[in-house]
Length: 498
Image 1 (cartoon, one colour):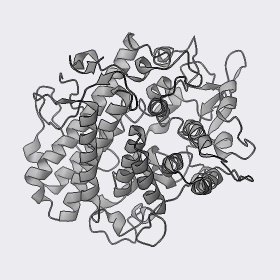
Image 2 (cartoon, helix red, strand yellow; image 1 turned 90 degrees about the vertical axis):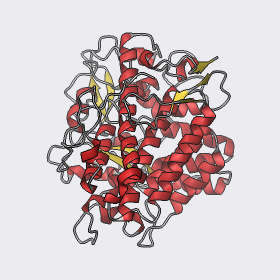
Image 3 (cartoon, rainbow, N blue to C red; image 1 turned 60 degrees about the vertical axis):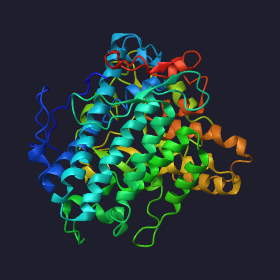
């Protein structure tokens, strides 16, 4: 595996300085001796990981809003758009220059983050005693393991084989190295999964009883006022790999692998978990958040990325609330018929996502109407923007509920959760809900599509369920569609065995 992922320049985020984090000369290694000699150095290194996760080349855009959603055929194909090249991804043509560049950029971004997490893990084992508080040391290390696993899971979901009934086996790199000269080993699907499970198990073990969430609530930790934490770095746990985020990643992983019993147990544990105050750790917040204009549902995020300029750059390709802008001029929108398909059978008269998360009045030069996603758009004078608007969701309670419903075998339990889920979208169900288990899985796929638009979930949903067609897709979907080829610079002669 060639050294595609050169560590990149990191810009200071908010008030946290990371100027000492990296020496970014491409032919040198990090100034690790200096960086990891203090707790502050470990903090800066971990902050650097989150900043890289939030890069537009990774979860700041490509793996949430644009490229990954194009792979799931979620955007309308404009023939005269400056983003017309995204059509190559929509058509799953991985041979063109645009597709190759996009894939290479995503791949490099993921392994850039992984390399940074590996550095923290390495020095936590080697020099972690410079962090005097053992709980803080465990949290820092646990977060690094969780970040590595989070990225490696998406390497598997994007580049790996079909999780069920694969006829093509794909070997992939699982990086545990920090050296630019040491090539990570490639693993078969099953061996790769063992690595994932191990990293998440380590993260869970390190965070358990050490994460401040075992003493305080998410809400309390979103403000340093009135709390007694002596370590200010341990606040704002929703923007960090916390204990419950790790449990949610495990549930997501097991659902993807088809291990429904394990996914169900984890999802139910999260739903029923109680915090230090005796209340539920977290519930779905769509009804209250969206009513306040918090369209990314921050109150139900088990993990989000802080991104101060998300509105600025996403407005370039997601039109937002600017109804006077024309569709097709470099924007990612959906047609009116797609919007109708998306909410088919739903009560759009009260449905808060339909009413508030889409600008349904965007027009092209011919006055044709389109829908524009407003999830990342907000008023310039909105209050407390950092906590409620300038975020990109990575794990939400809505997903946990969908996992639980899809994997439960108890119809009464499913319907109870489904009523709660729909109520979070301002829809009161008068009927009982699902009449049979066979109805559930199909509706869960529809809900993934409605719920996580612009969050990068649908391509993986199609892939894990083995969908032979995609809504709004062109033709059949098969392994040639779902297995995104590794960048040519990363080709391993044993990586794809037919």
